[in-house]
Length: 77
Image (cartoon, rainbow, N blue to C red; front, side, top):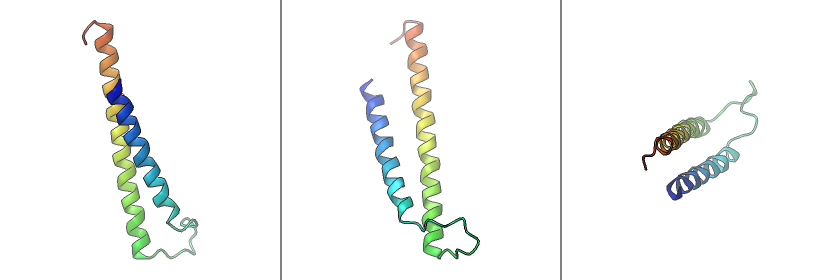
């Protein structure tokens, strides 16, 4: 269980980092009047990539938990 706690802690740290990055991006990015700079566009693209990676980590954690639950149900540890 310790490894899952560590994985979740790592994911939370990454999520906090992404949250901090989003605060650095202009808030009104949905407005058609907003003309994003190349730097802002690159930053948004990087945040999107990191969010996708974070989703993959969550999926992997869920899969590992499910495998452990199934193993415990049939008596394998």
